[in-house]
Image (tube, rainbow, N blue to C red; front, side):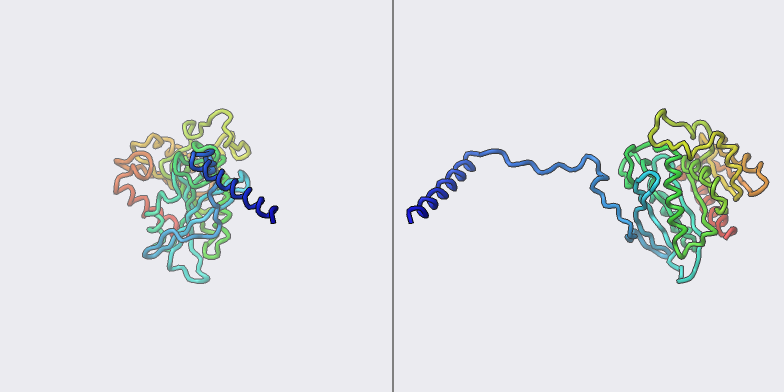
Length: 300
C-alpha cells in the first residue's frame, strides 16, 4: 500500500513540475515543418482529366502527362467540341507556346475552333514559364527548343490515342519559339498534313542557346535547320506582323518550304501588327483564326 502511495506522490510531483515549467515559459515549442522549397515537389501530377471549363459548343479538361525522355510532368489542356458523338472523328490542332507561355493562352481560339468541330490541345512546356509554372522543370526559363520538342512528342502521342480524334488530321500550331519547335518536330512527322506558324522564323536569334544549357538535347537538333525542314512534305501557313522582328525570317522560312517538291507554303504579312497574337490588330486576329479554321477543314 505504501508502495502505491509513493508512486502516486511521485506522479503528482512530476505533474506539478511540468505545470511550473509551462508557466515559466519552458522550452520553445518545435516549429512546424517548413514548406518544400520546390513548389512542384508537393504538387500532385494528376493524370485523370479534370473539368476546367465548358460553354456553348465545347468543354475543356486539364491533366498531366509524363515526358519519359526528361522525366518531367507536362500540364495539358484538352478542348473538345461538345457536338462529337460516339464514333465520330474530328481533326485536332496542337498548340505550342512561345518562350514564356501558358496552356490557356489561346482559349478564345480553341473555343472558336470547337464550334467547327475541331479539337484543340495545348500544354505548358517544361521549364517554359517565368512565374506561375504548372509544368515541372528545374530551370524555369528559358528551356531549349530541343527539350520542348520532347514535350510536344509526348503530347502528340497522347492525342493519337483519343478515340474521337482523326489521327490522319492532327495539325501543329506554333507561336514564336513554339513555331521553331513545331517546324523542327514536323520534320519527322509527315503524317501531319499541315502546320500553322505565327510570329516566327528560323534564324540565329531564334536558335540561340546558352552554353552548357542543361535543357539542350543534341540528338533532337539539326546542323542546318533551314535545310532540314525541307524533309517535311505537308502544307504550311505563316502569319507575321509587319512590325514583327521575326517578319523577314518567317518570310524566308516560307521561301525555303517552297523549294520542296511536295507541299504548299503561304506567308501572310499582317498590317499594323507586331510580335505574338496579342500584338496583332483586331483585323489580323480575326484573319488568323478564320484562315486557320479553313486551312484545317480544307485538309480534313
